[in-house]
Amino acid sequence: EAQVTQNPRYLITVTGKKLTVTCSQNMNHEYMSWYRQDPGLGLRQIYYSMNVEVTDKGDVPEGYKVSRKEKRNFPLILESPSPNQTSLYFCASRFLNGQEAFFGQGTRLTVV
Amino acid sequence: GNSVTQMEGPVTLSEEAFLTINCTYTATGYPSLFWYVQYPGEGLQLLLKATKADDKGSNKGFEATYRKETTSFHLEKGSVQVSDSAVYFCALTKGRYRDDKIIFGKGTRLHILP
Image 1: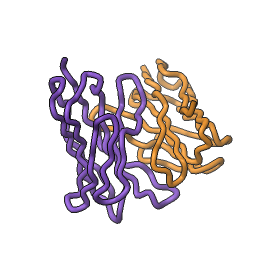
Image 2: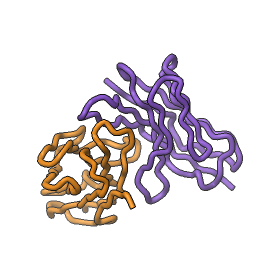
Image 3: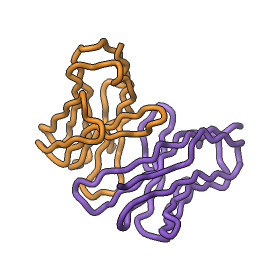
């Protein structure tokens, strides 16, 4: 089954404790991206990647890192999480110039 | 720059009512237009799309027509069901560039009452 898989689904952590949210897709998509979803603000892109070893900033990259060592995986790293990073995070993937994006089920992160 | 504006929610309707969720866009050139739906506890999934002017996208009883003259892509359904309760996002891409990103509206939450 074609899918984007994120883990974990739910995470509660403390300020400053490094964490990684994993994302994996099995559709051989070149383009992968991370979004955060906040009430009243909709979806905002954090980082994106057009291929292995190619990443770039989205609209709200501060406080986040990503890597793309393999085509299928695109982890999101929070080196020192802060409460303002409490949000619902989505990973998405698609082909370059593709019409449809496929989304993971989301990771609800709470930083206390 | 490119942008998408959709009506504020929440929208609350009774089952079998007619639904319209308005969406307008600002973009240069000829964007592709989409509606995505987010059911409770899930990620977004594509509901329908239209890639050129006057195209009509349709799926699951929902329809939207790409109107270039009014820069609109309103979502409609003739008779909604409780299972249509979700958040709906209008979106666009230019569709012509390798680094093209999806521009989303802020989403409209829809509640359908039995």
